[in-house]
Image 1 (cartoon, rainbow, N blue to C red):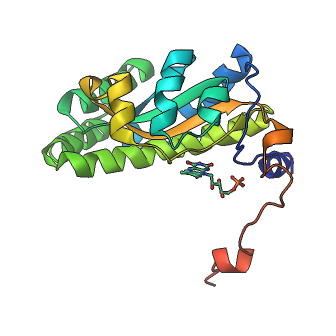
Image 2 (cartoon, rainbow, N blue to C red):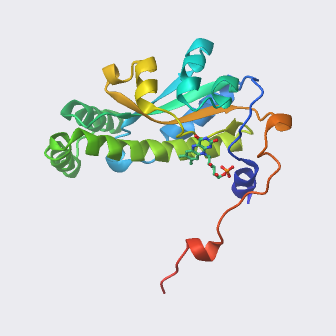
Length: 210
Ligand SMILES: Cc1cc2nc3c(=O)[nH]c(=O)nc-3n(C[C@H](O)[C@H](O)[C@H](O)COP(=O)(O)O)c2cc1C
């Protein structure tokens, strides 16, 4: 299966060579993230695409000095909403009505249900829920990168508060959740590139209940 071949090809690149990912491939990776399913379709996150060398250099020390932060082509920052607000929920429901061209009673009742629950919840709880949605898009982008023959390193090894400050995310109601440098592997400097991929056996992962 072609998808599985690509997923076997991908790995968490530890060294990149600085080559630029063509815009068409970048756009396909971002589109895969945009198409990801999210809870209630709210897409409660944004993706910051960093090309700027100085910004990458500022982020590297607060991301465990991982070389891929500066040697990547683009650094994608998946930033989740800091909380759910009435405005944010209404925006997505209104957008749905605009695009589909009609209002639906069931959909409007669902909107009211979300409006009467999410905004009243603790912001931290809401952020954690939003961050989970960002990870779904993150995973789709990771697979799309592999499909495009582009390397991508999932990165949680960073100080989110520091990254938020560098990028001014809090002012925009966002908090960094996970990073994804994309680029091209530097095989001669990457200790992981030739190691066999390790995954637990299927029987330890999947339980079939008949
Ligand atoms: C959410 C997430 C965060 C990760 N953070 C880092 C990281 O900060 N640095 C790193 O080198 N690898 C990181 N990894 C890579 C994992 O260690 C790697 O995906 C895992 O060992 C499986 O290996 P593979 O991706 O090469 O198949 C992360 C992976 C995920 C999914």
